[in-house]
Image (cartoon, helix red, strand yellow):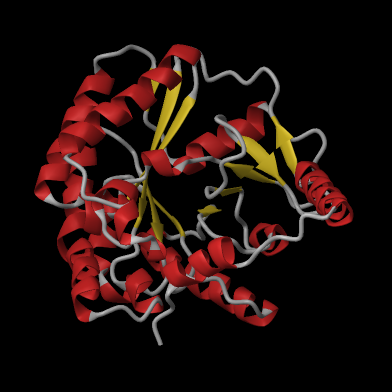
Length: 315
């Protein structure tokens, strides 16, 4: 059965009337303060962060290589699955070719199952020096602990057959403890800061570097309909020219402050010809400026751990 996220959201927000008595409002405030305190204890932000000598801004190009797996998880129709199939067979290789043209080292977050479906594209990524990182087994995080362990291990084994080593990073929602035990040093799904920072478990242990991104720099927000159940009126297909200018402005904001930009792409979205052309123009503009670094996510994470190890959280 297909889950109607839109109708569920509208019912929660529009139909239910909140309890607005003083006592309930005070209880809600206390609960929010407690949640904020717990979340704050899990974060450690890096004071006086600096990039390597000569680097003004770091740009991570990250690609979520979902292919059709995400759409299959939501039991969507064949047309949605076909979009993912394009990404697996065509879009991923187009992105590799684009990155190679500009000597950009990207990170591909790969569900383990993809290794069985599109091995040729993964071999091309590795041959070009791009990073393969974990993106769950089938683009979902199981609830049961034993299945979480199983999925992490299966994905690590699948990726290592191409790279020769276990993945060092992930874009997932597994517990930090399991990720650290599996050899991961970073995650990339949070957005609590503009710069790399650390996240830990509730007790402050198992710290991971967090490489933040946000949805204004995510191609799926501009170039897909019905993204994760969003209402039709909330999404439209954007002109690549408009997105180019938005992302250029986002880059310049980070360039001017010596910051960090994590650009999230999907091969079945940005692998289309007109969007490849847009990315080509974006990279050309960026490369005209001095002090721009295009590393993999693992490279950034290792730099953070070496130069700015966590002081409050424990690894």
